[in-house]
Figure 1 (tube, helix red, strand yellow):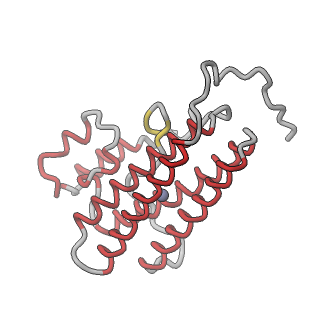
Figure 2 (cartoon, helix red, strand yellow):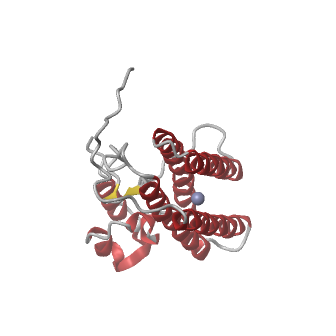
Length: 207
Ligand code: ZN
């Protein structure tokens, strides 16, 4: 609908998150990855709300990707994505416990969405196409794992010494590990041939 994350971010920035000083203009100037930028976070709580959203989103997308890979009869990559979904879910739970959120986790001011091949997702996942090959799915996963890693690196940089910072260090390492894992899978997953997105035998949806 009309929930444009960039507008929300703009409003939020002018509404008091002025810690970033003169950087507000940058946030509006087409840096599509500014969702991970420090200036977007009003507080550590907001940052942790974002961390939670990041993990929950990853878990959801991985489950979706696993289904996609099953449709491609690629069991191995489907299994990898199921495993990733479990790990990211666990991360989300750990954040919830650490923050003592007993009910629903607070929503971050700037929603976190996986980026597709064409740039940030708008919510309809248009380019998370059902024809996406394992190779493409792995590329998208890698891009988002790296983005998550950068997010935690920033959290490490900003968090004061203590349990929260230690947790962020751990999370950054784990996301870096995910990047390496995905890289290893990319290395042994051949790029699709020309015309991969032309479906000669479209699926029949029976439901
Ligand atoms: Zn990850």
